Length: 263
Image (cartoon, rainbow, N blue to C red; front, top):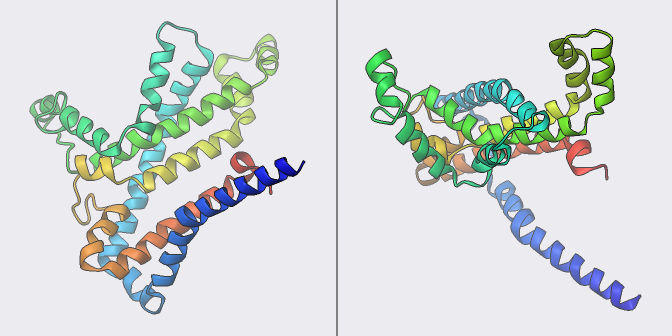
């Protein structure tokens, strides 16, 4: 018992120390160095308000795309047996472990003006995606889509199929079963996946700056504005970082019961 108690105390000390060094101290430093007295003036600057507005626009459009595209993908991975499903799942989740800047380079060489697909979009439809707001949305979707797919796929696998079978036996069509039985059964996971995807899109930096650039009013979202302010206006960078930190805390608090368990 003493050995177990000693081991538990040692692990607790190591874990507490790591948490303090890697999480608590940096957060406390942000709070301590924040220019609270001039917060209203800094957040009220047109460039910062524009960056926040653009971040909301980009992240919300990315959320829409993640849900519209991610739900069929999650259904396919959870319910349909087909050759190469493991490969498809790996491809879907790849952006979760891929360095974002690599994703940005991939998007650029695919959809840039001289890219594999982008050159034809430019030639045939006079559409240029790179370094536009649409490029920022695409970059955010690239990195956030897997979070929605993984969450919803896991939920679909856990649904009791007997309720769906009963609805079909009563004559319900497949879309009716999906709308009236399956989706209500996973509504909590849908909300959790959507929240995680939105939060990831809101904080996206690497793929965005590589594929969309950092142009004020067009592609400069909050993370890019923070990066730009680090040299010219460090106090503003700290305050803007706290805004994104607050959003992250709200998202995690909302998902506490589903992802972190109750305390």
